[in-house]
Image: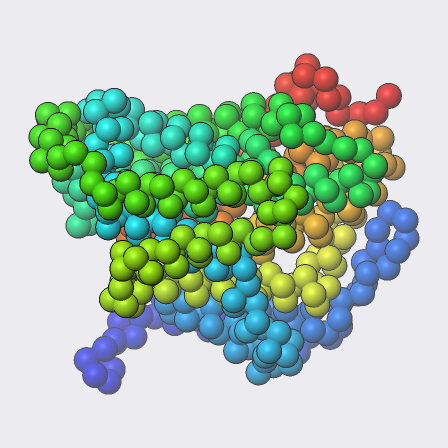
Length: 489
């Protein structure tokens, strides 16, 4: 329901309601009496500072505003920084410092590479080749996209994979013939790509920073070392099962309007022939990208490269493209999705806010304490669900850092194999399927304009629940058969 106001605009009462609801929750937490402290199984007390209590209110407000898009998502991100400084949650210098965190710049670098692929025409060439192999069946095309996405995440961060896949999917959507408006096929293609990128990224150490970070934290607390091959051994089956689940869900939830793109092979062959042989621009982009991705892959094996942040390497590629006049100022102003950059800037700021004010730790301890006397499997799944929820709102590395130490302490009382805790937590840190801010691939997919934030949230509930079920099967059946029992003898 809308009512005319100034400048010919109208009030969207639905958005107004959720805007006011978000504000109401923020001020409820802001003015509420201090919350009681929580205790871990050892009796250690965790108090919630007033700044942490306010941070929780801001966290809820931002979540509501993002899900229901009451204002542009980038503007909500700016609000996060403004409210921290305005209402005394953190210093403005700290809140806005997080807006330029290296993780945000890594996303910018990944977008530069995606833009270069698109401008050079390399994405069209790759898309044409993939369709020639996949054929005309839209369901098989979806499956091919998810499979390629999964394999690429074994070697590089899922952000870079999503950025590289995005322009390819736009070409496929144009061949489908409905790129100007949202379609079920478009939703399935882009949402599924984001989900598959997350599932694939848990399968090797190189899929995301959270994986080696979790292994390092685990070794620090338990003294047990997890090798690269051991990690992949246990994570591969659950990651693969999740990708298959993603494909089946997308085929069912987003059943394409067209079962086949009739004549697409012939059309693609003609278009590929018109492109002619590969150009120097395409070779240039491919070589620069291969060098940068190669450095990302070998970085963890070459001590001299370890101090170099991942974002530096991706931004280096963007710098090269500018130096050689491959990009210009117009590209920077019009073709870089600054709304998405701001979205992740705000996500980093609220994540650090929850972490540094003690709010995230207070919530984690309070939640896990509810399951101390539960069956061991219930405890494992509760930890996993907590990590999955947290990683939809804050950095997955932070979600791991908050929950893993606490979970390992509780697990020792219940006789649970600590490796089960590690792998379960890492698996769920890779599947933030409900909010755009949960992972860069989600936000990159959103650029397609094939779905809304509300649709992404509602559809994402289904694979999130199924992922917990897949994890339960792994913990009870598959992992014990592979040599990792749930309980210590």
